[in-house]
Length: 424
Image 1 (cartoon, rainbow, N blue to C red):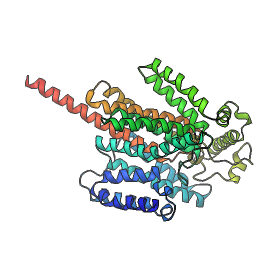
Image 2: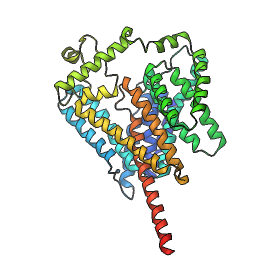
Image 3: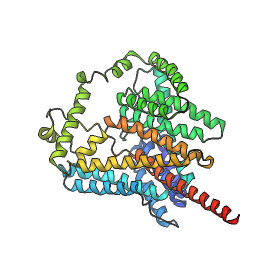
Image 4: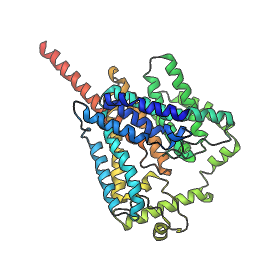
C-alpha cells in the first residue's frame, strides 16, 4: 500500500511539475530530503523516483518562459567554483573507480541545486520551500518523537535507511536544523490550528533529536539555543524555559542516554571519538601532501597506512570540514568555508535591512531561522560526514533569493518615496 501511495504521489505530480519549474523544484526537494521511497516495503524502495522528478523538472525549466539563469551573485559563483574544483580533484583521485561513483552522485545533487536556484523566484516560492523542508523532515521528527515517548527513550531514533540521514547522528542534526524553520512558519501562519500543529511538531521533533542518542546532536542543540538566546529580546524568559525543560528531559530519558551524553567530556576513553581524531589527522596530513586532496571515497586502509597516526584505525571523515579538507585539499576547504560565510552574510544583510519594516517581517524571521539552522549545522556537522547533504544548499538558495527580493522591495519603496517628493 505504501509503495502504491508513493508511486501515485510522484507520478501524479508530473503534470503539476510541467506547469511551472518551481513546482518541480518543490517536488525534487521533497524526494531528495525526505526520501519517501524508503517508507515503502516493496518495489518503491528501488524505483528511480528521483530521476523521474529531476527529468520532469528539467523539461519544465526548458519549456518555461522568462529567465532561466540562476542568480549571478557571490554565493552562487563560489558554489560553482567549488563544483569545478571537485571535478578537478576527481580527475586526480587516489582511487579513480570509487571516486567516479561518488562523483556521479554528488554532481547530480549539485546540478539539481542549481536547477532549484533557477526555479525559485518569488516570496511564495521561498515560503513553499520552507514548508517542503519542514514536511520532509518533520515527518521523521513527529514519528521519532512519538517513538521516543512510547519507548521511554530506551531505543534510538533512526532516519530513512540508505539516505544521507539514515544514521541516528545524521537524522538528529537534520531534525535540529528543521526546528528553526518550524518557528518561522509558526510566526508567519495565521490559522490557529496550523500554529498548534507546528508547536506540537517542534516539541516532538526536539524529543526525536534527543532520542537519537547523538552527542553531536546535543552539542548542535546547545549551540543553536545559545545563538537564539543571544538574539532574543526576552533573555530571562528563555532562561526560565530552559530551567524548566532541561530537568524534565533528564528525568524522562533513561540512564543509558545520560551515560552516553556524559562521555562527551571523556573522549579519551571513547573509541569512536579517538577514531574521529585519527581520521582528522589523516585528512590534514593528506592535504599537506597533495594539493588536490585524495578525491572522493579515499577512506581506504592504504590511505590511512600512509597518512594516519594510527594506520589500523580506518574511519570515514566524521566532519564536514575534514571531509572537505581530505577529499579536496586546502583549496576545497577554503571554498566550502567561503560558501558558508557568504551565505551567512546574505542572511545578515537581510536581517539588517528588514528589521522594523512591517512588509518585510517574513524576511527578518526567515533570515534568523536560517542563521539558527546554519549554526546547528556548523557545530553538529563538525562531527558528521555530511558535506554533500542537500538541506544546507537549499537554505543557501533561500538566503540568496530572499536577499534579492528584499533588495528589490526596498529599491521600489525608495523610488516611490522620491516620486511623492517630486510631485510635492
